[in-house]
Length: 140
Ligand SMILES: CC(C)(COP(=O)(O)OP(=O)(O)OC[C@H]1O[C@@H](n2cnc3c(N)ncnc32)[C@H](O)[C@@H]1OP(=O)(O)O)[C@@H](O)C(=O)NCCC(=O)NCCS
Image (tube, rainbow, N blue to C red):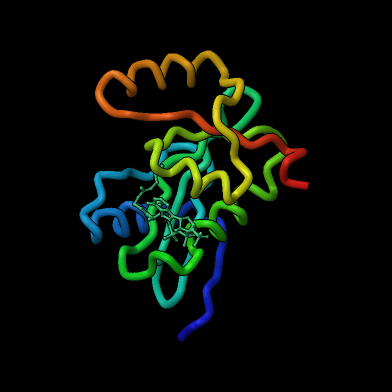
């Protein structure tokens, strides 16, 4: 099987992540700002977005090709993307994914910046969501 590579997606290639989401019928969309990360085998097999928010970053859009799940690609992609970040990283997820993110070092009930607290309150009206976060120290 070809090697896996984890890398930030270069600016001109940003549309490739949306193409990947569409290919798998995911409603996810690449964030318009910030850094996109992908895992590639021959093509993209996973992606995520990291958007600067307040003094940290907001992780969205983590998606692994359904044919490639259960191979720790999601775990490794999050680890690669979060490692160079100097500051907290937050995300919202379905409660079922708490264990998955804890496996990468995230904890529940982080101290969120106000903009994400407001956003979580809005989103949580229509779907079950929890907030999780990781501090730089937890990644040492
Ligand atoms: C969630 C997702 C990113 C996981 O990617 P993955 O590469 O299959 O996950 P990994 O192989 O790294 O899994 C690591 C661990 O998390 C667990 N896990 C993975 N997906 C899980 C899920 N949906 N629910 C509960 N646990 C899960 C695995 O069982 C594994 O546990 P183990 O270490 O005890 O074997 C992938 O299933 C996906 O793209 N789902 C659809 C999109 C989505 O829900 N994204 C998250 C948005 S917040």
